[in-house]
Length: 82
Length: 325
Image (cartoon, each protein chain N blue to C red):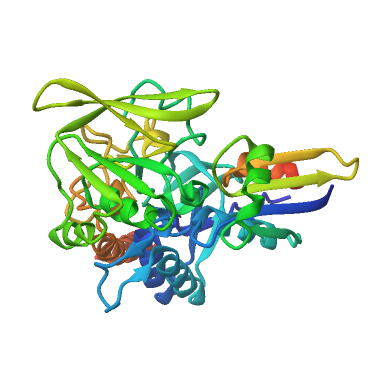
């Protein structure tokens, strides 16, 4: 089970909308970090994902382990938040 | 005990870009049950395009994401169901079409393939190695990481110019590398002129290699085709927009025939070589790769699908009524 879900997004990113839509369709809540309004957190997104891209979804599990999903990748996102 | 009959969808649409969403508006308004599968972004390439200036009805243009959202809402208003998932293959099964999907096998009376296209790769050294770490294909997704940085944009068509202009809101300097000559519309080229303080256009310049150090892109090496000399562009990142590649890999074992570049062949009714399977939008052979055309093809496909369903049901009724002479 996911204890916490954080998504790094930007205003213009279509794939970010898809991640949010997917989580909403599953009734899941999440925190959003918009990098357009919080550019100082870009480094954090990069360190977590190793990539200069959004969306980056960070799923914190019950045992506090973290799983990071880069992009809108259902094959990875669905099991990560299940 | 009688076995439960499996559900047969009236129409399954593969993809949820402008062509499929328009088709869905038409089919659902005719009360034809419609299910769409989307594995990427609803709205397709339009949704990740910064700004759409040539779609009729929007005097000032519209953000691609906003247009995609409006199309989705319109299709859903009439009852279209959009499932986030992938179709891996399709084949005929009796009177129906069986689709192999991430939600399991599903049956359909008719299918519309509207999977669109993705941006092509240029297949040069460094492109794969620095993917998403300095090499990008989506400016609206990744541009924000290049505030106050230098960029190279590769391509000379509408997408390359449009996205280079978008990237000026972040980058301090952009080198636009165009292999031969500019193919972008006159309007976009005029717009490009307004950004010449930031964008420098290099016509007749190939992109041969993307070079980096310590995991970061540092430069692009190309060739000036007029002189044959190597040229270098210092940069922090590269955005590539050099044309489109159709999303038809999942059809390789199907009856749907493709042309030499992998686009789907259709007849004048937009029906493919597989009966009951139609295609529309950027994925169709002969498509003009325009949102307005995709929308038109979506509407046409929907009307052809309706006719196909009606003809099929009429044939069934004729066969179920004993002939009287």
